[in-house]
Amino acid sequence: MMKEDNMNEEKISEYARLAVEVGVNLQKGQTLMVCCPVENAFFARKIADCAYERGAKDVIVDWRDDYISRKHWLYADDSLFDRVYPWDADKRNTLAKEGAAYIFICGDDPENLKGVNGERIRRWETARGRDLKEFLDLETSNGFPWCVISAPVKSWADKVFPGEENSLEKLWEAVFAAVRINGDGTAPEKWKEHCKRLESLCEKLNGYNFKSLHYKNSLGTDLTVEMPENHLWLGGGDTARSGVRFVANMPTEEVFCAPLKTGVNGTLCASMPLAYNGNIIEGIRFTFKDGRITEVHADKGEGILKGAVDTDEGSHYLGEIALVPYDSPISNTGILFYETLFDENASCHFAFGQAYSASIKGGDYMSAEELLKAGINAESCTHTDFMVGSADLSIVGTTHDGEEITVFENGNFAI
Ligand code: ZN
Ligand code: ZN
Image (tube, rainbow, N blue to C red):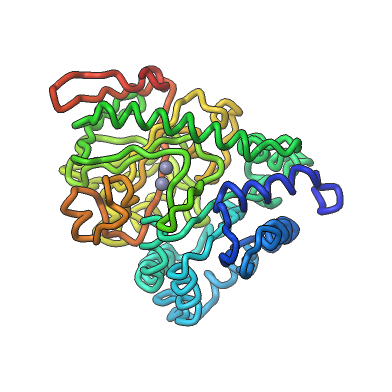
């Protein structure tokens, strides 16, 4: 067990600084919201130190705890799953409108909600989408800078490294490696270079301006994805409305965009299990017709997956298409993290549900109707990533002139 006192002090401090300086790029006078598991309070405290050093107006921490969460999901009054407490919604929505920065620290038992009524989860997702609409809309349109990072907990580490005594230590080291931290304080510089690399890949893809992409592999994926006119591939950093650059996910190895909402046809098979709301779903296969998911299959957790796809109308459509080479630093570790933040950065992925509005030129300043008109899935309260990359994945792009370009060959970029 890794305790605060034998935790690598340099690495933890560098990680906190990375999240505050590069992740949300906190500005003087700005409020910082942090959501953190109680086990990792020492990490939230480091983040608070960095934030106040940079002149934060305030640091507000929401603590969470797997044990209490599980009890809540199992035993709390049934009426609670149809709404967010108004004071809780008000807090989040108000801070988002103010442009407060938000650091979400993931690190939970991937199977914490095993056995919880799936209907409760589905109702809660819908309620959350409605009551936190302002917060969620601002989040997906870069209204405020946000960053999702992770800090391991024992239950999660035991899932990743079963039966190993020092699982927690090993997972911390895997996380540090994935976010380019070695304790010498150079992570912020490394990240600036890394983001530049991703940005130049986006420039290439935007130069092709593909009309469609065709995915194929031996798992059974055979899918055509049309791209909206005026689409924009993004990667590395994002620009908040305040003009400040931030990095929404650490790690991030992806370049992403949004598909044409009604332009997805064929079969899509996931290549990794998906840890979704405290449940593990395996063997996912979707069938699409004109963008809509018409068939949902999973070898394990099919009921939970069907519930997720049924969250609202928009969750029946894809909102994200993301390219990650099979030979990426995270996938080369060979570790299955059971945490989307890592697993999605080891693999090409898609998400069903809400698209990021910046996937369309000028999209951050468009209304939901305008975004829908521009062709992207802009009306869902959910966004669920699932992994599809494999060693034999090929992706062929077709340009508006009908030229075919091999974008991916044997799981890696060919451009
Ligand atoms: Zn993604
Ligand atoms: Zn995503």
